[in-house]
Image (cartoon, rainbow, N blue to C red; front, side, top):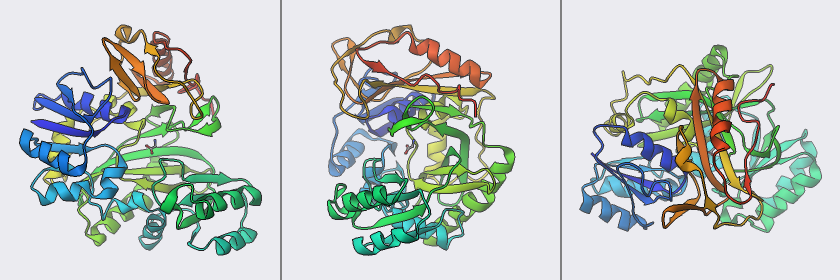
Length: 418
Ligand code: GLY
């Protein structure tokens, strides 16, 4: 089978790595890929392309299945174009991708379908949104409606911060038209959980739970990033919490997707919070795999990913079972010093040849025979071991083999006592 993967990050490297294990898979093309996928097994990087060019490539090369990594092409309708033209693709339709593309729509979808989530109100009028702040208990969460490169969710601890967020989003339009509407939502405190599920529109199969670490600093301090590390399974996701999730979030979501009659053959990601007294709440949906959750989860999965994608495409997930190693995984991300603020790039990366555990490149390019930093988040190492402390220790032993100028990583992934 020939695969085409669209995307350029660590998630796409991890998908390619897992697909390459499958005896069914002969070739994997990645558009545009990165320095890690360039020479990976069975992999060939191809240039970034627009939708029409991707479709032509898929037809000309006889691609059996295309996997869309990031949200933007999904929200823009790439999968509809492929399916209309007889090309197999993994990812929900443009209509279904609205669950990630519009925070306003997605909160309404949760409410309409009885999905357990926090209280919220949507606004398209700046003055009305500001007036509403008088009624809020603090903190609140303010979300720009549309896609904002992961920066559109702002936690505001008081009215001053909330007024600034509303002004930035709705008046200054720092996220463009993504800020035409906002959601003002209650802040839910607890332990974050990520659940990524495979879905064919009729059947939904969740993977193991994971925990992302979004803040840049140890102990969850400092500004948010794209994700600095992941542990899986998530130690706070007990069987009781899982039952709450299944009954009050997973099942009503699937019911809502069926009712909407979307072509939802792909992935759905649940961003969740476990509270101390009221169980688990849904914060947001994504319509693609999480990054860096994918890098932690796929090395634990025993199934053939190519087989899963085929079953999604032919709507045959029913009766299929996911299998995971009875182990823990710990992914530590290395970033360029200064990230998520200003940082320099172009530094040579050393030591990757000494690793014994999977390396996933997020932002590095190949220059001659070397990898060179090219982004804020540069790479991650995923270690698998019998217990989380062992996985964490191993991940950090592996990370100590890698170096580049100004390398930065958190030192507490998998070590937090809470
Ligand atoms: N790690 C969360 C996300 O991919 O959006």
